[in-house]
Length: 377
Image (cartoon, rainbow, N blue to C red; front, side, top):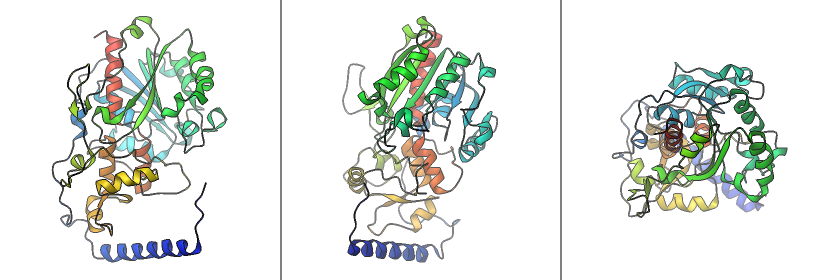
């Protein structure tokens, strides 16, 4: 429900907005984008590539649906898979994929990238199909309309699996998909059509358990066509944490300030989940997704609003409270994207691609386990 504001509150917010805009104009008026960055000097930053060392080719091929900004695609590439093609309906996401991997077969836009009309039989023989069908039908922010939501494209993902008959498939979505409310949907729309053809596993993973400096939880569905491959499947286990567990010592969690190279202020923790409102009603340049997360950002002294296109501009326009203003690259790092993966489009489009993506190190962890199951290693 929308907040009910008094006239006094509206006037105060309006005055704050005007003051912030004038201040930004004054600070940026004489700013030289190519001048050395001033303001907060960053120290050593996390390199997400260290979380997913490039593996040699495993001889397996992958087909990507709902590719978005490329989180799953990148994770599978780093795990040794050969890219066959990516389908993505948004042109700006296709531009990102083309720019980063000019040699990939990227099918984007309403004509080429719409999975609802795409014929998949030409890809019969691909080893793995992976993708993240739109999560809005199952998320709280998306009103959880499930099968009644026009953005529900699980039937098209299942159709692709049935037409291509891959040895394995991987699908990602929000944790809400495993809520009791959607038990019937999962049984009817995912498990039943694949029954007899695939053994399907369902599990949740937390990004910060795999070195990503962000508290982000997602559900995965992994299916295998051959019983012997399914028998070899082992769910990814955490690589980072706070304590030792049955699998041996874990690496310490990568926290937000340290990962961004910010000075020690006596407090650090993983960042809250970055807002993923790419298809929402507003072209937002913030990553704040809740009131609860605002406290975490404040404790971290990181400003989650007004993300800037570059580090230089972010430094030139610090928030009034003195907190660290993020750039697109900072948000990408918190999502687990390496610095050399560039996002096309305006700031709100880049943030939409980042926030909607599977964290690449998490995709990598799943891809490695799928590879081991298929290869018997």
